[in-house]
Length: 586
Image (tube, rainbow, N blue to C red; front, side, top):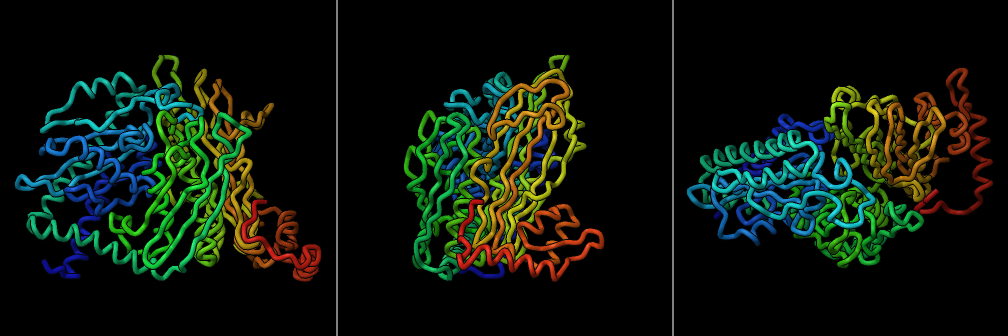
């Protein structure tokens, strides 16, 4: 069948709009803040064989995992898939990523033929396990982490599997909220079915099948054309996770090599640490997802993210490594490793494309979970995923107050947090002198203070970049490290980066995000940009002098040009002829 380019473009956008409409449906109908406000969910659309055709405007780190999860469903149920069926799974060893991420798949039939699947994956606020929020970084095996659901029918031919619903209800702390979120996923799939049937009514079955394949082939052609423009060669990078929350003195190595030849890429994770005791291990599907997202970020903006893109990128990781775990490894906090793999990939891409890749971000979102019971024994669980600073870019400062590139998530508002949880947010503010200095500085991080208003609750924190700071590139300085503090305005106690502890009434927990790494020599930064940073309290007057060599007169808010020239000359002389490091960890 001939592929008309105009029809292809119209069909592609119609199909992608269905995935976007699914995302809007979840956002508008879900119960929990982690979905409604953080937007920790994704939607996608596949063809009848499970090949990803289009994704919604949600989280990149989910979507490379959809084909793996759906493949498990097809392997177990092929020949027993019917109209009205709905499949659910969350088991990382059967297609999932970690237990809170629950996949829902709905097959879509037209005239008895299976043409597509609607797919959703949502982070549920609790799936049982030893810690409220099911997100503990110090679990040591999967059995501690919560309810495992292998690929199974949630509905069969339109009839609800009441036994499974009862099992879920019995094993989670907030069944009303969990069921509300599951129904949001079901609603999104139903919307997708309705809109896809309208598309089939317009084009017909044969034309629809043809153009679904054509959209995938189009993405592959576009990706290969963009990859051919990249330099050939092998580019490696090494980074380190602080620890796994169990063996706190043991840093964990991440190592990747990106090899490019012609119109294909290989991402090789050989050299990365073996899987660890703590719950930061990853499935291979998650490693593929972050690898696809990183490579996609340096290609053209108009390439669809689907099976065609995936065909151009091979990802390998040794079995039993932290990014290709084997049972019974724990993985509840696997997001930490995923974000850090993103920084490692960007490091390798910076060696390939020094003028197109920014320095290290804040290391990905921090997870703060606070859960317990009210005086009436009513359970509450607050789960917050927040991140805020990118690394400096070769053309501009790192952005701040913005989601990590691999997450595409939002911060929960202070008002909603306080209305729905026994918490008071005492501070939500940028921190001075924490961004990595550079020609283009890193993004400025922020802090949040959470005050406990109930008698007690379990606090769980997953964070990193305490010991190994966000690296700077090509002379840029590393961002300042993260920090966790209990009761900062009283007798304060500095806490580990990964922790579980009990908070009591009026305790205040403070998390400070790390700053983004800088890009380029700080002594070449525009003095007026430094002046603006001092005005905005991103940089102190002292740091302007010490890190940038810029003397600011705050009585008149002007740069002292002569003093700046003398100070920068002195700093250059002290440095000597030593060229700035390509990668800077301090």
